[in-house]
Structures are given as structure tokens and as C-alpha cells.
Length: 483
Image (cartoon, rainbow, N blue to C red):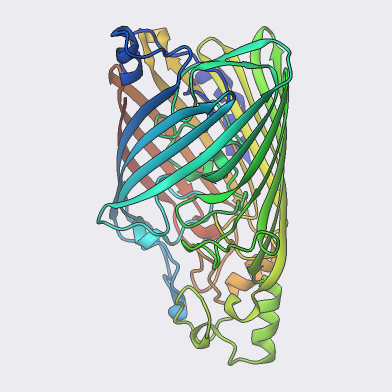
């Protein structure tokens, strides 16, 4: 708590930034920043202000090193989800091509092929809501995998108000729309393309590395193992207000790739209310998000009760999907999966303090009764921090940032882990419960126009919510190029 208060007080005085455009919001682009669309416009071959199509791309490589840490036990009694206490290295390499086209008046289509190769720390086990690299995927491999991350259609219906100009950007065609409008999107996408946007904690390819700063750690949004889904999103903008609703598909099994195509039986629903404001002549945004998932998932207390009633209903005897635990003395969620609900509510705030400094806060409370199905093993979470542009020392495209994240588990979740159960990412065989905490500090150096190198340091306390293990220090270097 003292760390939390200290960071809250010093962040506004120290740090943050400008970030890249939101999917559905206008964003300025530096006049001398190179990209293909600006170059084609300069040649008279394209109109970047009123686009019929656009194309962008990015490449990001992140390498991380974890130092050795203290751990009196690891994977106790055959449970399999501990972070290994030895020193390790990890990497991810991703490349993305963003293609957009205008179909007819108000209609747009986007196709986004992507490639990723990765090697995770401890096979992506042993961290709850503070996974050190936001690009890691549950289905990743060392060999590059190519897939279609997005393919969707968007229709915009204008209802007047003031004209709003959108700058050309990935998944955003340059053009003018009404400030009062209805936007319908259908297809394959990430729900984070539309919900829980944040200028200072969202564009992690140039900001923080830790997944706790990508969105709420406790937001178990429906998605496949890569973070994408199929569904429908409706957004209504009314000047400074916006409301969004989304209905999307979950995976058929928790944390796996295949989706469940039963949209009226298993689904993820979310609603978000957004308001933009000006405080001391500086812009800010407040967003409130609620979600409700109906999925084929197990409750922690049901798994404990089933094992206590019959010790044969343990982790090693599972006849359906489980995470491969070898602990024959532990309960397992595989025995109690059935249609269950999971709900949560969160608040997301960002505030610019000056032209070069901004701060953010996120906090979410989820019910914590059921297993993690798509995101991280966290039931309640907060994250906060600040970023600063480098303009004060003559490096206007550089940025520096500091963030603090903390997560908690529900009582039933703790009891399940203490009995040796595992849940998606975590489960050491037993637990000496304490909140999981992380500090993430970075400096992003702009080498030239569209190339950045970022140095990142993370300090993690109580990995997997277990005070018996850690702390853990992780050092990373990130290279990011966009065009």
C-alpha cells in the first residue's frame, strides 16, 4: 500500500506521453513521419485526407531476461504452473499488415494478417495478471505462425453535430464523420480494438511491456488463445459522450484457439460508457465498462466440493480438457465445467496534465467465482502510472513512463490453489496468499522517424499471488518499426 501511495503522488510530477491514434478517434501525425500513405500522397497517387483505402504495417521484437529468484518449492506434488526460479530468457517477434478500404458511403472493411514467433518464460506459467510481455500468446511457438487477426466490416451512420476529421491510421481511414453517429462493426477482431482504450496505457508497442497495462488484468474478455474473437459491436457517439455494446464468441475450451459457435448459448457481453472532458484546459476521458460472460466453465468451490466428496475426481484422472496437472492429490476444474456466468465492472481514467505529461488509472472488480477463460488469472486489479514526452530534453518523439499494477484473488480461488489446483496460468501446489504487484519502468528512444528502441525494467512481487516465491526482476529491450 505504501508503494501504491508513493507512486500515485510522484507519477504526475515525473512522467508520460503522446500515444498513437485510437481506432475510432482522430489523432495527429507528425508532419515528417514517414509512412507509405504520406509518401503516396506526396506523389499525387493517394489522398490521405479522404481515403478510399490505406495500408500500414509494423514489426516488433522484444527480448527479455529474468533473474533467478528465491522459491522454497516449485510445482509442488506435481502441480505444473510455477514460474521456474532459475534465470531464463524470452522473446517475441511480431509483424502485422493493416489493410483498409472504403466500400460505399459510410462503409469500411479491414483485413489484418499477422505473424508471430515466441518463446515464453516457464512456458507462460507462474504469473497471474503481470505477465511480463503483452505480445505473448497461449498458442505461440518458436516457429513463426501466420494467421488472420482481423477481418471485419464497419458501417457509420451520421446524425449531424460537428464535423470530426479522422487522421489516416491502421484500421482507420482518413476522412470526416459526424460527431453524432452510430457505428456498427461485425466480423473477426479483438474486443480491445473498441473497448477500454487509453492514450497512456494501451499502445504497448511503444509504451509498457507488462500485460497489466494492456487492459484491466481482471477483464476476462472472450477471445481465443491469441486474443481475437468473432462478434458484433455497436457504438453511439454524441459529441463528448459515447456508449458501446458488444456481443462476442468465447473459446470452446478455456484459453484455447477454437471458438464456440453458439452465440446464444455461450458468449461475452460488454457495455461501456465514455465521457471526454477538459480539466484545467487539458483533455481527459473517463470510461466505465461492465462485462458478463456465459461460458462452459468451472467454479472453484464446485471443484473443491467434488474432490472432497470423491478423491478420484482429481487432476490426474480428468477425462475432458484440463491443463495437464500431475497432482493426484488436487482438485481440478475439469470435473465441474458447465454453463456459468462471470461478471465484472471497471473504471478507466486518463488525464493530460500538460502538453507533454499524462496520467492514467484502471480498476476492475470481477466476481472471482469461476476459472480464467480467456485472459489472466486475476479477480480484481488496478493499474496506474504516468508518461512523459522527451520534448523537455529536446527528444520530442521519445517517451518515459512508470506504472504500478496490483491484483487480488477471491477466497474460493485462493482455497482452490491452496489445495493444489491449477488455473490457466497459475498454481504452485500450495499458496501463501498475497496480492501480486508489479512496477514497470521504460524509456522509448526514437532512432529515426518510425523506428523506436525501448529499454524496460519490471519488478514483480508475489508471483502467482504467492508470498513464498519471488521477488522477480525482468529486463527487456524492445525494437519497434512501423510504416
